[in-house]
Image 1 (cartoon, rainbow, N blue to C red):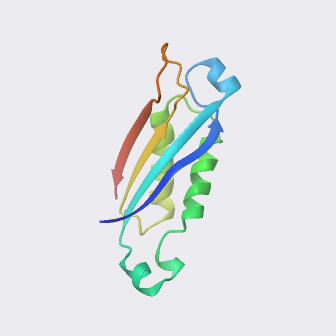
Image 2: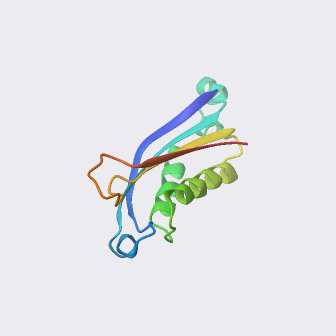
Image 3: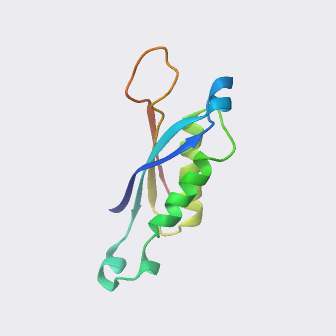
Length: 119
């Protein structure tokens, strides 16, 4: 299956289970892979035969900066639901949420979750 891949969509959000996460916010980064048939877009060079990347980025940013939730698992689910709802040509979506500043009691490079959904 063909894929559109967007890597490192970043914004400050206020998600987390701790009060200080919701008060101070922190950086989140998102990677999205959308499975779809890109053959028509590849042959005809027409934007209306693919998914406009800027729309996906806007959706991700809106969720990252939107109302806070406790878990990055929920953030990933909201993003995948939004993509599948708004882009009928999307057959599957994979979303990775990176939370590099997660308060885990030790220095780490990253905490991330990946979800995959198929229509």
